[in-house]
Length: 471
Image (tube, rainbow, N blue to C red):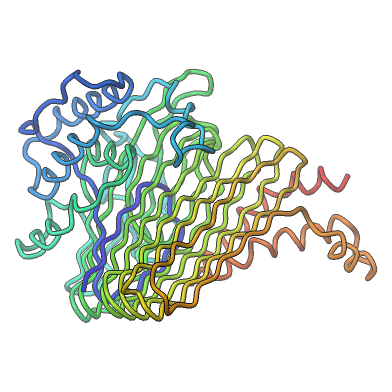
């Protein structure tokens, strides 16, 4: 039984409970990898790929075999993949011109001086501009046998071979491949068989280097995290993406797993991939809150590769400015008695704001007695606010219980009337209804300190909108 998970992007508080789980992420490329040639039809992609290779060549001596394997596979994929446009179905509602028309420059080294304070009560790993920084991390509370750190520091050849089994076994989109080509290192989280980690691991991604608004400069970081939980193991992971400095322009192109908080600069581009493989009788829960980025896109790919598997996905997206919040998910069930639930909720509170949801659940022939449910609900608070949703089920098995639904609306008049009839003013009524709309997802975060932090952040973002709408 095994679970493989990759995710590039910003993550919030994830709770992961898997009997056997692996997370796969790209790693840097060494000099031995063939140089990408200019025989590519998309000059912009070629330019980014070559700059990523050049940024690593000065610092990379020799890469661990799993990392080199990932780089080789990624370089070949990049050669045949053009830059996505609105003509491509997966990007029909997602405009990537913020990146396309910027000067993309890879960040080859972390900042020499870092004025960052970590505020967490949990064991934590800090990744700054795509680079692991141990001086800002605290891993002393982890149990014996659990490893968190760089791929090159794995304690045994056995674990290295296990990681190699899953690296480069999945093909994502162009951003997935660019991450594999440009990641300076792969962070590995390893939990041995039968080990239950009581405290969650808090991974914080800091984006420090950034361009000024209007400069067209867009520094890019490519952090990658690989999580392997052996049979009977369990760990909770909190992934949090933070921008250091307001209104900086940067591109965080991440790959990882689970449940996460994304609160980066409103001028940033945030692209994330999460890939999970679940073995028999495993359970995986992803809780996501995304509020930052001018362009934020999360691609989630989950495959149940054994029977009696449980998958639960919850996401809350908030767009309070000229932002695009995009979630593309794909869940494939191939074995009997699988269970899945997906809840997607979003609020668009600006006339130029946009939300996108494309959720696909595929129940294959042998996934009999599957129970799968999917629901997306969107709240539009401005007349020209936009949401595009595409929930869909593909069912081949004949003995299943499956459902999906979608709802898009403003606040309902009868709900507001209920409050007003009881002497509650309009502004207070709107606040209560809007905060409770996202609260259904936020309250699922398993750690009270994280819940409180997220609630405070969302209230601060919504306060100007609510005051303006009630005046």
